[in-house]
Image 1 (cartoon, helix red, strand yellow):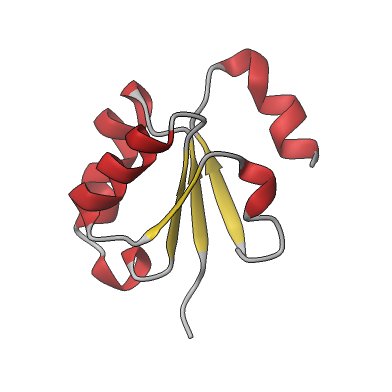
Image 2 (cartoon, one colour):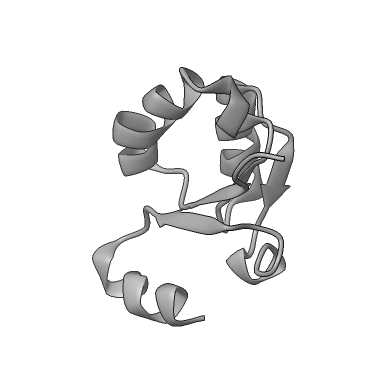
Length: 83
């Protein structure tokens, strides 16, 4: 089993910096969890990289992943990272 990774926040930063790299790594995308408070945004991001796990709350993936990329506005980083 590979690394299970969450991408928390699927907006502009994710689309510009993270999703292009992840798309080139299908072994990561198999177990990639896309999280955005707008579930449709998470679904679109998942579709773009071939992932299947979509959530609207990062708390739903805690315990299911080995690590996370926190790609939300800066003022939200601390509260997400500490959980």
